[in-house]
Length: 435
Length: 183
Image (tube, each protein chain N blue to C red):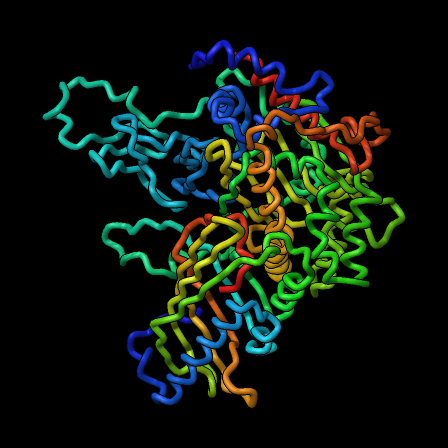
């Protein structure tokens, strides 16, 4: 499936990153030729998160999602297994699913009427006997299945590469951190909805922002901290990142910013923003699940909370805002963000409602944080692409002193560091170097 | 949720009250276009709720009733506010560092198709209207949002005030990095 790449372009790939990873070519953020290569070498080989099992509890439940630019149907079959089919009729390519989610007995192509079961097999062609011989073999005319599907904490990952390493190996120690949001309670989490919006930026910009770019917060989000002068909740939220936050880079390009609260810190030890604790019932709920968290996660991770993190290539999770999201590529300078909002299955309904509202207030295109992120991410992409400007690489040299940590797996530094971003671009580069 | 009701919409208000409701909506639109957000907050009741839910693609099933607008509304919203959170958003716009709105967007709200029915409580109107929000940002960024507003307006000693707004958007995805403007 590998396409031939112009040898001159191929020869330029090694130089896109400096040897120590501190200089990254601006071409990564706007170049249409690199984008075409990336579709195969990055998105054709990586584990891509497509959604959550709680969205499809029953046989026939489905939702549409994307792997890169490829539309896929995620469906639970009659045996209860999760399937991921390419959303394209094997006959002429028409999408066989044209609604966002639902329950379907079959997937029906509205062009010529071919009909497919939940497991993807072709179950009917109109006028089949008039068109084909009686012993016509339809077994190779089913929906195209994505060869690898594996799950972690209900997150459904798919991979176009049949020979890819297992999801468990791919995620590695990332699950040690992701567990603190997704596996805190025995009942797990459930999705309450998905926000979708488009940003005029390259997909790597939101991914690198959430892999550990704490340095943007004071400037980008100044307005949020300004409207709460003297508000201990707002001050505590920022302080908790600066003081307790650690940036952690992991193998395979994953990483993030994680808050490790001191064990005697009463204010900080609860998961969930301090601001949320003022909502009736939420503080009590967060405190009430700490014993269960300690039992499940142990004494270190009981006090650990994800600020933001990115699982390579484009899955991010914001622990205090109850969302995981994917930055779907939509061309070299366009990204479609899907932000799934999740809550603990066993939380009381008023707590779930408060968490859902807190997400909409803070993140997504209407959120008081993310509006200004979107403005900056578009600016980065626009600013990267000019003639002259595009020849000058971006500097990713902050935090060269990252190293091991006694309690945290990975390479660890304070939060004003770009070593997690360097790890992400190294992984991208490694994949791009292999034809 | 406030449903459209063909039986009652457009029949309940006197010409005078219809006129007052329309003038309220026009004034509100002008205050927002003129970025007079604090004045706009003054048009809301203290218990005001304000929601802009996500709208999804839903397929009609053969043999079952056609898809209604309510079938398409997700329980998750882009805006899920009360007066306190709206006030926080307004305060933020005034800081000078809300970069997505600084320089500010140039907006134009067109409100039309105003229909009035009696509300659930005495002194309240259920008001349906159509909204076109046209927005120009920076040099050449143009967005257009259209939708149906389902409002509850309440007669108070300060005149008519907005007690509830549900905005039914016509798009299933937000084609903009930024929904920093009120609908």
